[in-house]
Image (cartoon, rainbow, N blue to C red):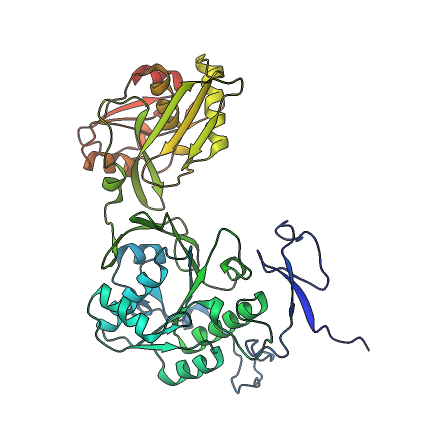
Length: 460
């Protein structure tokens, strides 16, 4: 009889399991990421098996139910006290959900979760904050910075997840924060904390607690540029919601983006500003993205992009300068580099602009990263404006997708984009001709529909 394997190899990037070592992971195609780790002797997170109608080992009886028997109530959603966070989550927290919050160290994950715990506790909901990295005194110092804390908010400094699970079963809080999952360990796995098998086993135990007790569990995971073993990417398929903090930790603004969400849209973003007293939500991100726009400068065009159901006005900047070398340089910050090269090729072929001897630099101001095709026309306009050194009117907003034939194709939600531009004081909008009939309320704005790039450049 074959002897059971005591160890296995896990990919540190995607969590792929293999019986033998491989140079390249078959799942994510990453090289030298297979790590040997012990297998769990007996997983406590696996549910007891049993046929429908039979009694399982835990004493429960399996019985299928219909949709009519499942009741939904408004109380199943909990507000966090941040409208931006609620929008990203899908109008609030769902009882029994497992939420992974990832991001670089120091980006503000622990800060915003502590603020959420404070808000929930102030409304009378019991909350448990478990820290495996900071002491109780360190947490109190950080809590004093974000403001007064009142209500049933408890703190626990522990890394043994088995002991933490007993506390959760006894206290029955409404929400639990695990900060962070890399520091937790369970006796079911003999490997070190932070390893792939240890993190996966701990997450499975937390998932069982969340679903069984109806407790909302937040898991904090660190992401580093070096790609540490057992990063949050290993857990993305296990949790209900994955949120990532983006932005430079040395800058004041943070972007909270939903990567996976079983209870809402995955295209929503939340904008926050880091202040001395903690994170503050930015209810109108278009205003801060357009702050500091240069007056009368060429190569600057205002565009409108959609993030989920929210229109965002942002500034697209371009700088076209004659190259001093044989190979012109292309740089794109905040947008797709290959898309910029494609649009420059369209300008050369369809509009006869000789850009092959010019360096081109494209930037999305404000630190945002946008890849929506609706920015194509604004990027083209910014490139031509810088090339000809002729500024575009500051009260004009531009959006539209550009095809390889130079045509300007329709984009979604044109009415919402025009309404946002009108609200911020813009007086003119250049948009695809196919979208003119879909804009119901122009509100006095001048709408110019274009069908190709040549028409847009003539208007601008």
